[in-house]
Image 1 (cartoon, rainbow, N blue to C red):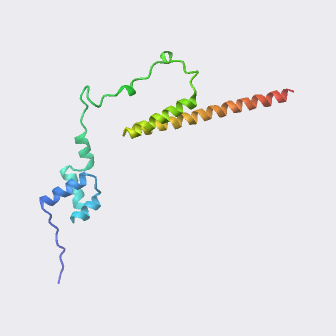
Image 2: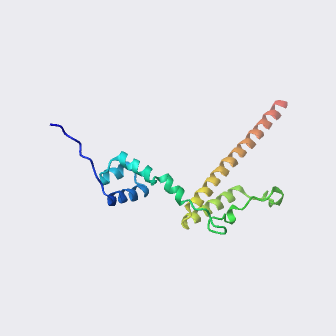
Image 3: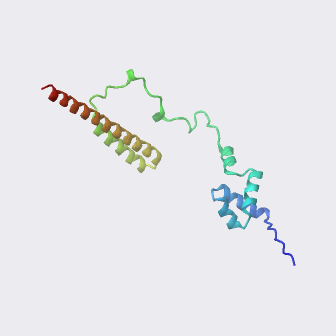
Length: 152
């Protein structure tokens, strides 16, 4: 006696639910298991009907309206030319870094975590540059001290 594999048939209602779950971000294997559809069938249908995540993202990518919310805010204005910058020679780097970290804390409290993270990363980069500059100064001073000792 021969055994034939039964074909699964899922109606349009099931496939609508599969599409909704897949487009919402659930993985294909998870959707296939949950709705009892074949994984290859799911992927084949997604490609054929155009409900892959890539196509959905392309369809939803709207061009910004002029003067709309996507226009850069005042924080993203172009940098001023060097001659227009104020004199910062009297500015204490430690105070500046502390102020920036406090501002990042306020941004987190306002729900603007992305901006806070960018500001915190800038603070870390400035600290590294500041430490590197201090180390260079220390090396120069120690080398100058060694030279003066050698001249004696």
